[in-house]
Image 1 (cartoon, helix red, strand yellow):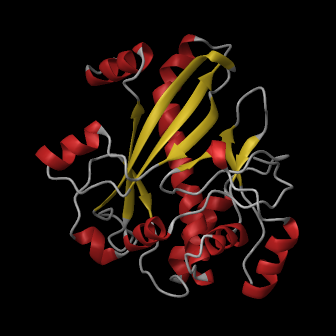
Image 2: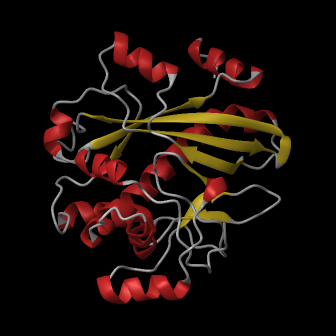
Length: 275
């Protein structure tokens, strides 16, 4: 990983995942898809080149709400078999600048609202359009430069929504310890091929569509390694918001993993309505 000043490549979106995100942004797909009632995130209305102006502006406005910062680590793209422990650093600033000159893609990077581990400091930083394109190009996935203008804001907004949902889970904990700051994101990974037990149950018994992506995020509380808890995130698509029928949505099912006593306790308290 590297600082905000480094224009390194990041763990890229693989071709199939990129196509899934774009496909799930289309109105036609959403009209035929069911999803759990989780956290909606609007997406561009149509897959076209360039993306619909109004939809693009919505995403750009969401991305621009992120605060400026003195920097942090790169936040990877949603991808299969991808991890913050294995960020690709083969792209140099010169390479990124050359790509930007040839494609017209922006090299500007948004600083997320997501704090890194306390011993590192700063916030995670999202990759630029040029970095997305460079990473996919290196993997010979035949990226389309025009896609980046839609994919990057979607990626940023979805990750911000995921963090917001984690903070909701953590709210009860932070209230118990007023002296503790908000939690920090230590690391993350993505693997769309690994179906969670809950997602499999939803697919088998409730008729939900298969999640098109899955992430695992490790957070720490009070800046202490001994107080870490893992969250899992299933990414679904669903019906558009009735108030915005032409604006499809993503749905995020965010919850603590059941691999620790704390995670089990949080899920149980949530189930009985105590959290």
